[in-house]
Length: 310
Image (cartoon, rainbow, N blue to C red; front, top):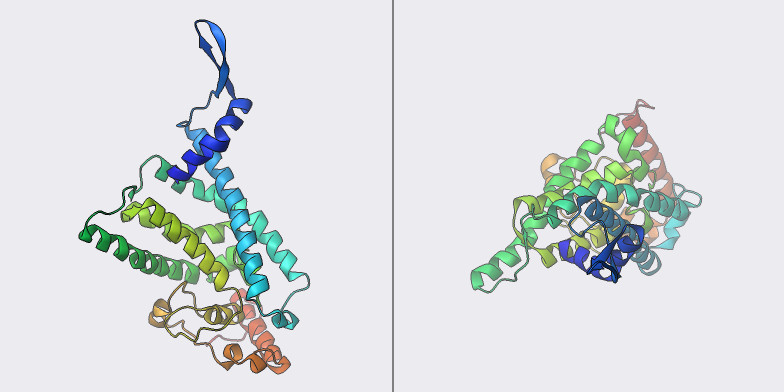
C-alpha cells in the first residue's frame, strides 16, 4: 500500500493537501511560487485520510465494475424469477454495498497504515535465487490456506444467533444473490471476514506486489462465488454452487476457497442437481421447496419457529 500511496501523493494528494492545508515556502524572505501542505507525506493523519479515500474510491470502482461485468456476462437472469428474489433486489444490493464500503475502508485503514509505516512483513525486492523463487511461489497457496481457515471460523461464528441477528443477517437478505450481493454486508461483518487477509502479512513475509495481486484475486473470487454460474462441479473448491447452497440453506459451506474446513467441521453440503441441472434449477417446484426450507432454517436461527436444523 505504501507504493500505491506514493503514486497517489505524487499525482493527486500533494496538490489537494497543498490547497486545503497550505504551508507557504520562503526563499530569502520572499514568498516562493511553490506551495506545499502543512501536512507532510509522513503525517499520520494525512496517511490515514489518504488511505481512507483511496480504499473507498477503489472499493466502489472495483465492486461496481467487477459485479456489473459478472452480472451481465455470467449471472443466470432466469434466477430473478425465484420467489425469494426480492423486489428491486439488485438496486438494494448495490445500495447496501455502496453504503458499506466507507465503513470497510475506515476499519481497514489501521492495517494499511501499519503497512505504510513498515510494521508489516511486506518486502519490495523480487527473488533472485531458486530458493527465493520457491518461497515466492509457496507463499501464495499458504496465503489461501491461512485465510480460508480464518474466514471459515469467523464466518461460522457469524451464524451464531446473537451475531447473525446483529451483523450477518443483512448479507443473508439475499437468499438468491446476484454478483452485486458480493460486497453487500454490514460493515463490521465484511471487515471481520477480511481480517485474515490483513493479518497474514503481519505474520508471514510476502512481496508487496504479490500481496496486492492476491488481494485483488480474493475480491474477484468474492464476486465469482455470487455469480450464479454453476459450471464447476469440483468437490474440493468452494464454487459458486457451494455458496448458492450456503445462501439458500444458511448453515452449510462457510468456506471461502475450499471445502476442507466444512468437511472437517461437519458443515459441508454438496451441491446437487438443484444447482447443476438448468431445467431443475429453474423449476418452480424446486424454487417453492427451496423457499420453504430457507424460511424454516432462518426461522430456527432467529428463534421465530420451532423447526430443528439437522
